[in-house]
Structure formats: C-alpha cells, structure tokens
View 1 (cartoon, one colour):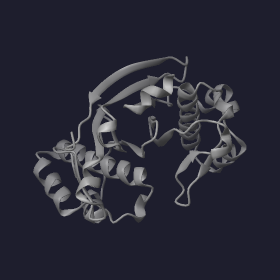
View 2 (cartoon, helix red, strand yellow):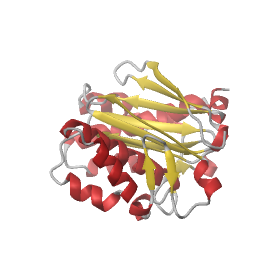
View 3 (cartoon, one colour):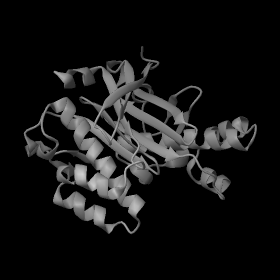
View 4 (cartoon, one colour):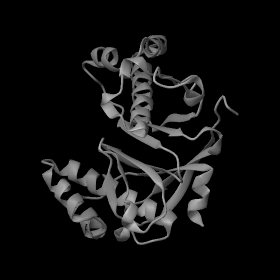
Length: 258
C-alpha cells in the first residue's frame, strides 16, 4: 500500500497557491474542508491569508488521503492540548503522522507512518530587527554560526532563515512550539545535529533534519524523530491548478546512530 513507503521515507508535498485567486481555490477545494476549517478561514482579514489557509488545508487533506487511499472529506482531525493536529482515533483511518506549514507563496505538508515530524516554510525577506530576533530565539552556537555565515547581507539572511526553519520544524515536531527553551536548543545546519538539554545523548541522535531553499525566496526545513527507521526524504510538488503531482527532490538522511 502507498502508506507503507512512509515507514522508511519522509514525504513532503509542496504547493504554490498564489497563481490561483481565492475564488478559484474555494471553487475547487472548499468541499474538502470541514465546518471548523471554513470558520477559521473566514476569520482572516486579508484575502491572501485566506488563500494560503485554504491551499494549505486542502493540500494536507489531499496528501494524507493519497497515502491512506480514502476521500479527503473522510478525514477527521483532532488537536493535542498543545494545539498540534492529528488524525482522530475514531476516523476509521490507520495512524499517520503529519505536520503543515504555510507562508506567503508556499504551503507544505510532511508525512511519516509513525514518527513525530515537523515542517516549517518561510519567505526569505528583509527583517529590520533581525539581530534582536536572533538573540531572542537562537543559542550561542547558532548565533556564532550566523556570524560566521554573514559574508554579506544575502548570506546572513539565508543563514538566519535556515536556522529559524530548522528550529521551528523541531519544536513543531515535539509539540512544544514556542514554549520550548529556544535559546538552549541548537541545530547547526553544517552538522544537522541536535543539542537539547532535555534529551539524553541517544534521544538527540534519533532526530533527522533537512533544510534547503527550493527557490531564492523561500526556505524549508523538516525534523523527524525516527532514528535509523527513516532513510530518505522525498519532495513532491502538487499543482493546485490541475491536480498533478511531480517529484522534484530526494535526499538520503542519516543519523550518528547509523
């Protein structure tokens, strides 16, 4: 079955909502959403926020349904106490772990069979208070990495968002979110090794990471607590206009446990 691939592979579906106006997105995908999702969508003040919300939640339903071989409308979701969504136990569907992220111009969903996973996508953009943000969320090791990568303004910006997306993907995978001790956690892109004082040495080595820029304007990172069970990560682009799905990147993943 399709979902069997997710036992040993991490799959990421990516889409770009902006070519499709909100009206067309709703015409094609509103029927996939439940009442709670529609209500949340209508709370957004700006149309582009509603556009990305519809695209992201339609993408996650289509992606999960693809592997479970069911209709997207059949999926039922619940939320942990920390707000992280999961497939509801009473949905009649086998377990599958997933996480969702969206930013201006890109939405993405990561999936595994049974391992905690997280994803973050960010639009790479100029930030007036970059140094202040960095000092608030980055560890000393990460700040040192950022300094060493700051050859010019562009390199500094790319390094910042690589660090940011890695940390965001990790805290989303753990479910802690922004309540995590951000300045005590380090994920250095050059090594892709985790430092977290709340974990044992063995637990830290179980984490797998990937971070890159699929375009000059976007950064994406994934985190998965799978150890040697997951051997590779596969990226697919889902075209919201015609419903086509195409692979566009594969990378082997290793931990120091291997």
